[in-house]
Image (cartoon, rainbow, N blue to C red; front, side, top):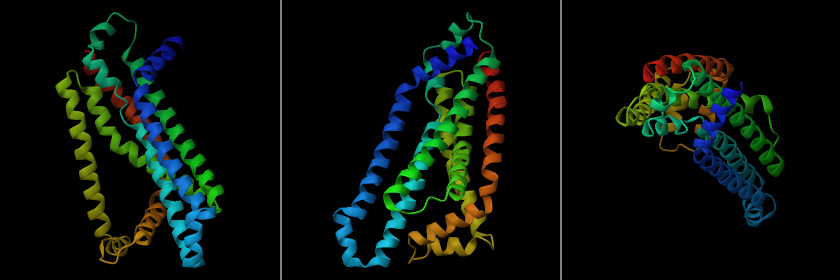
Length: 262
């Protein structure tokens, strides 16, 4: 266990700039959302709301609440991206040095697994904490079950988007091969985004929501209704998908690392 702990420490040490940058982005966006909501409650925006009327003020406040609730959850998921250690290992030729150390492929893959599981827990905890804070500021009730399903669905999608790019890096032996991981991840996002759009558009269940979203008079409520429908349909599958992706990623990383360190 000491060896695994040392390898995890090495991973975090090499990736500290990545994690610090991502956390600062999350905190910056969160703080911006808190300031807007506080201004809506007792600041300059509250005075504007008095002129707008109660109904419009509630609609606006709810919209801001949902935006910063789920936007922050998505930003937390940046932590699930490849943290740069694989690229650093290739650039520094860590593979050659690693031959002199008693570290197996299984241990290397286990370190990745520990980092990934810790990232999922941190993302979910951070999203819940943010939801509770903005709920306390805005006075809007925090529906834990609904919000938790949404957070897990966002995490599952983020893991899916990151999976192929991370796998490409685990496979890479040279800097040129490592550079292909960015291309793989971009194509994954494009392909999955377009596939999801056309599947939803061709579905009787989702086509009315897609039509409302792409119409000329589309507004944030069209996006909110589509998101609510997606959550209703797929929310229950989020946690099993996260578990499945976590297990699959371990075995894929193990297989690809054997190729890298062969």
